[in-house]
Structures are given as C-alpha cells and as structure tokens.
Length: 147
Image (cartoon, rainbow, N blue to C red):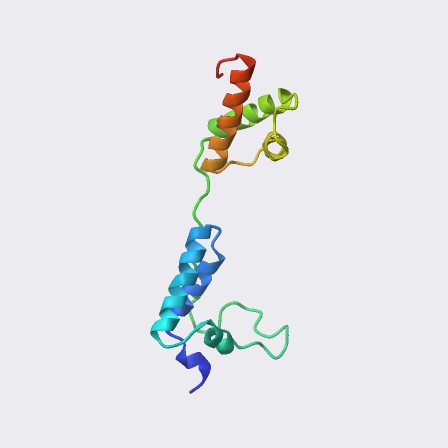
C-alpha cells in the first residue's frame, strides 16, 4: 500500500478550493483537509509524501487524465456587487478626494484614492465603505454636503 492510497478521497475534492480568491473559503478548505487527514490518523506531511512529481517537467501537461472526469473545481463567484452607476459614482468620489486632498489624506488613503480614480476597477464592499468614509470626512471639512 502506497502513501497515495492512504489519503482520504475527500481531500482530493478539497484541494482545488485552496486556490479560491476568497480567503475564508481557502482557509476553511485548509482546515477541512487537516481535520480529514487527522480523522484518518494522518497529517499534512503524509499528504505531501503522497504527491507524486512527474519524471519530466513536460509530462502530464494535460490537467485531465484520459477517460476520467475533471476534478471538482468550485465555480468562481462573481465579485461584482455594484451596478455600473455605483462604480461610476465610486470613481467620481475618488476623483473628488484626489482633487481636494490638500495634504489631509494619509499616504495609504492617497494611494487607495489614486488607484480608484485612475484604474477604475470595481471595489469590494469594505473598500466602498472606506471610500465613503474618506469622502464624507473631506466633504464635512469642506463644509460641503454629499453629492
């Protein structure tokens, strides 16, 4: 019996989740693998020993083996939670903050604002909240009401 046959099959289903963009999902998968291995009397060292490496770097280029279905891959969740209008509003808020900084922003805030104003990527919910807090603070200091 080799080390590969000792690893519970559930671990094979959990390993792809380790590559998730969501930190909590990846950490949860890591902990679940640890629990599954511990339940079988194994640890991560046994898992590492069970991973084979190809004899040649060009061997096994295909991610699928002939006749076998692909391993479970979690569907990537859409990170887009804001409408196009909200995303445009975020960029407008960032441009306002950039143009009305006058030395009132920290270096971290300034870098954050500059990235949003110039790159136009969609924000996460915590980033949008932070942007709103910065904008509100600057508008309050300027005696301006929210637009």
